Image 1 (tube, rainbow, N blue to C red):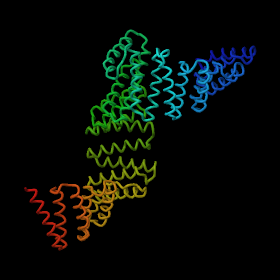
Image 2 (spheres, one colour):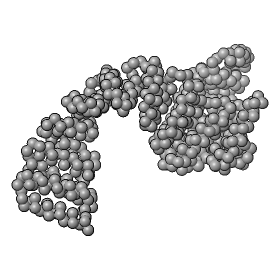
Image 3 (tube, rainbow, N blue to C red):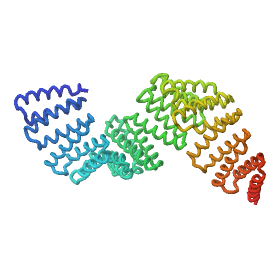
Image 4 (cartoon, helix red, strand yellow):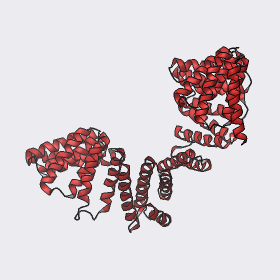
Length: 560
């Protein structure tokens, strides 16, 4: 980094030596020290830059006093260096003192103050003091918008953008959107030469801007400024998309994101990392909205952009390939999904090794495809590899191990091997209880069903009790799902010849259905019928007749 500046450094160091020998502590020496510090900063040596500028400050204060205008300039530079080094408190102190001195010389409304206020705002933003950063940016803008300073719009929009960031972080989304939009309009007006009024107005101009960029490229004109300006516009559109998303306006957020991507694609100098970011953001929007074909298109665009600047075998490329596979799987394109998952797996193994968590995740996806394709044995082999990796990485009792064991149990159910499926489900539940996690409701239901099919009704009873308790804690007392599980719990009692014990659960299931459904609903009739059957089995004739009478009354009402 230092090489381009080495000659200038040598010249300034020689000038500094001569001036120090001839003049001693003086303004000339201080200015040379400050200039030398700036060169070191640009060459990447921030520590040396701070040292030289602090020396410059000491010389200035002894030569011309604390309040000379050059002191404010050096303080501003010191603030920049400390900001770069992430020593934010020292940076803020330097900026504050620079502002004090500049105010003495120029007054409160000079444009030089806005420059320091802007940097102070950036420093406070980096420090996480978003509210105070907002104040600094607002003060800078007040000065910039003064009549004598307002002619140069290119100085205003960066500060507007910074203010938008601070407002966004403070969750003042309405004002953030307005601020970003003002910055956007200024940036568009700079490259079009005419006033811009919002996003719609720009959409109509983008085609002509893109044609202009193509023409400049064909004529070998320098289009660096246009490309950079379009990049700034694309960035501000992305920020607007974030704000609209936070406000819950998904449609507008998606529209703005797509416009941002169009701007990126119009840049003469393609910024492929930014193209990939926007394409992938849009793809995720479309995927969540179940617009799978659109999601596929944008993930492919993101993948092409990533490969353009990263190559074919990076972990970031693998993740996008994995996302593409997910879309194909959702669309039912199993062969395409499998090929893409295999491609992602190969890259992940190359980048991360055979036993990484990401490798396990992709193997898990491959197993899902195998199950769907009816290749259960191959799916089980993939799941065994997932379990091995996760056990080695996290231990045998990790929640991710439990999840995979449950998936293996599902496969064994599909194969009709209930005893084996049962052992996997039991292991899953054991791990979840060991970790004091909520037991997986679906796994408990599968396990209870298997217990019943194997005639182990006492175990089924215990499982159904857990299911009822779990559903009540999640869905509330009067959930139809709770009623269904109470029916199954009653069946487990009946199968153990404990019909009397089943009655309270059937009555509770009936109560829930009456609370949730209309009085003539078929589920209520079915519930009454079950209860009547149990009363008959228990030779509780009076209760059976009462239930039968209610059943007949509802039947007659339904016929009318």
